[in-house]
Length: 319
Image (cartoon, rainbow, N blue to C red; front, side):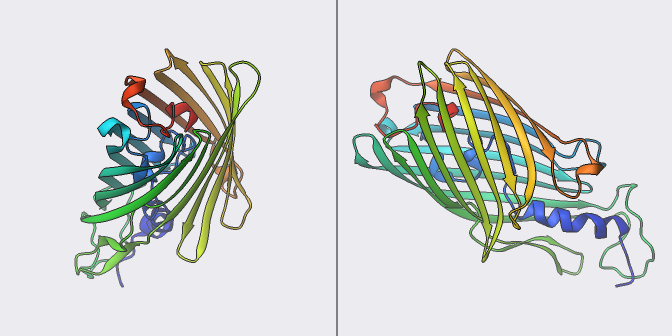
């Protein structure tokens, strides 16, 4: 191919990694609706979540991610519906996803339930070659040209399961995008970027300490077909009903340290959570940026206790 988009050659490998995954968050427990559709309706009330992540501060064209999610229980908590809207940007590429989910709870014991969730979503991927940052070395090949604006919209489906044991332990597994799809197609209908299904396993447990204090240990394992993507290991300390502080360690597919994040959150009236996280990069890129920052707002619209089936999670804070 005669045309060489210099910036694309640098950015597409990173863009591919980003586009093939759901948005990445340090507050992944609060943003679990992105990864697992069975979360819909799993709380004791409706939950609204807003999140913004700015990755690799000081790195030009670094990833930025925004999230809006909402889910609510139906039929006294036996079912639930939800929606997720996310936007990711990396250099001259951007991706917007919108999904609707439905989940149904199967009561196994008084405080134990298995939730099964389904999701339908639409994804739009764009590559903006009108940017001044794009340089075309030569012309004459119509595949990619200066000034092109490439975009493609695809549909997909997902499935997830969530086992809640005694309102203390959560085990989840999901495939939010089951179907392989061509995210980006050039002017000659050639596939430039392909989405592969990602698999997620989540584990979470809560242990009470003295008084109103508690500790939560959570893991989020992300996999591609036949290979590990990365692992998040998170420890949260709940100080009373208002303050949460913790540490999140992210391991790469080679089981090396990718980042370490410190986070804290403050809860108002057991309903409104504000969270801030700072990630310290530990990969080979660490000298090129000043870390990553993440903001999270979570609001729980509480329902009366008697209207909710047993086995649902008590609060987003404890997911």
